[in-house]
Image (cartoon, rainbow, N blue to C red):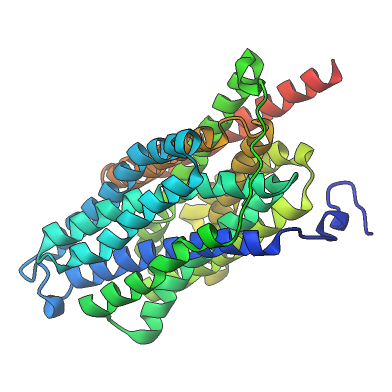
Length: 399
């Protein structure tokens, strides 16, 4: 065993229930892969008449419709994450998983509907299917006594799904509708894999949520999730706009952001496994501070190394905060209505993403400096809020 003040490898000595974790991780990966493949190809089709999808669109109209598809997905998640999670607590996680899989099947089938309405319907169905994520997160937490530390690993596998789909398109070239439909349908059975893995999660009933102090802490963690998600939304809006205006090509910007995203996946996977619980809120503080520093430096980027630094600090910082809040929620709740509460946390995440994708994009059109300043304020607010939560928790433990 190798021990350090913050990191312990002893926790990695055994990994129980490998089959169960593999089933849930595979379901999360394939669901994220299908959602990203779905959207990425829609954007390609909007800009190309090859598939006959809105061929008369101008560039501005194409960008508007792409934004509409992205926001529609987030709005549906905003509504259905709490509902699917509540269904999981009331009727069982298997019922929620089957319901999600039904919509996962409808999503590619909706692409058979010609024109933009088919694309929009497909994104709506995909948003409902993706709302299973908090339930899968709760399932990971319930598989073992210390299952909460594997939540970061689950989020990492979902992230790999988000990253792999664009890479597949980059390698294979533009895919036709039929290819996307068949490939997505082929992944549907993977979402049902947990049903066949003999999972027996343990959700212990306690009175943790009845205490006002616990509720305040939970709401505080949700606020941190919303702020971190807003910074993740900046990854798709503010960072590319600023870098392109600084003279970098779209290929270079995309490569740097993808590399930053890959590093953040490694950080997510490692942090949940290696860090003790008392370091998760400080990790959120570090994540917000990293994001603020990267955003402040963004206007001064002049080289590829600078660009990589910004992509790493903002993406990695906000991602570490996300894994911190989700893992801590899973442990704090002691598995009482955990799926419902993680579903509300997912609602906070979707709200943050919507702010990052819309408000920041709108501010960029008005004043780029104002948009950057707004995101810096959000990051610093997250740093301050996480410091207050950590201080309050430390005082409570000492007393």
